Amino acid sequence: MTRQFILEKHDRILVTGAAGFIGRRVVQSLLSLGFRNIRCLRRSVAEIDLELFSEVSDARIETVYGNLLAKEDCSRVAEGVAVVLHLAAARGEKSFPDAFLNSVVSTRNLLDASAQSGTLKRFVNVSSFSVYTNRNNRTPGLIDELSEVETRAELRGDAYSFAKLKQDELVANECKRLGISYVIVRPGHVYGPGNEAISARVGISPFGFFMHLGGANRLPLTYVDNCADAVALAGVVGGIDGELFNVVDDDLPTSREFLRLYKRNVKRFRSIYVPHAFSYLFCYLWERYSKWSNGQLPPAFNTRRWYSFWKKARYSNTKIKRQLGWNPQVNTQAGLDQYFEACRRRVAHA
Image (cartoon, rainbow, N blue to C red):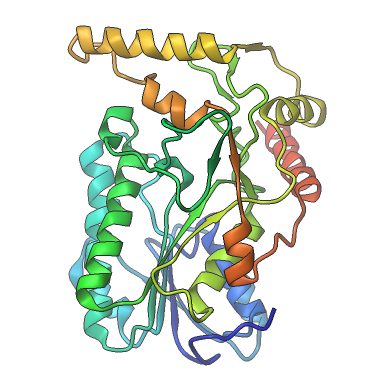
């Protein structure tokens, strides 16, 4: 596929969250595509160093520090920027107000500053698969770019998913109002060295033992390098204004296959498989008791979360392959091998 780019190789690209798990790989993907003027936004000097990109002799890699909640910082980092790849996110926030502030308010500030710069050609928002509901799909339902998103994300009890939904809505509405070209990218579970946690779609350990909830469900995995390539392409390929792209790899393993491989390659531990009917009943009863107790028992488990995470689904990457010319360069077997190796190192040093 011959790609047409919307900018020249020396046009400035801003990557927010550039020192993060995905952001560092996005910078590398942009360099691999031939782009040579990249501004990397970092929150603090304590974040992972970006000096590894200095080996590209003809590239200008500019590191800037700033807080997207500060409008003056947004104006400074958006100056002269042709494309914004917005990866900075409020991961790990438990509070809904904090998640909203650090994902939605910060994005509004950056959008306003980017529009005022007069040089912006596209704004790319990196979202999440967690916004999909799968509630009304038949089993196994297809999750693609036309799938239903959660309408009452606050009832799921997940501040991150709530903030990502509101962020997506903001980007679509504000970009249309401001006349800004935008693209939304929704990765599945991004894994690889640097993120060794087992996805909650496989199971969780709320009571001191691992509850295997995924069973025969396929996992919407994307290896971190493949995800980074998708984000980079979404920023520079022409003819995709206003589009939404899901990012999942090929040959996705089931939850059961993944857990078996993890135990074989990393460490063995006790897990208890909970059939889907029982896991749904557990979430339903927990949700009912949480409502009855007026929230004294937090709604950590609820049917909305079950539909999104543990109801059987299948996934499509047809659109991103067709319109972006994206293909996962790291196949699933190789990705899992590298992931398990990183997991073994972490376990050995624990």
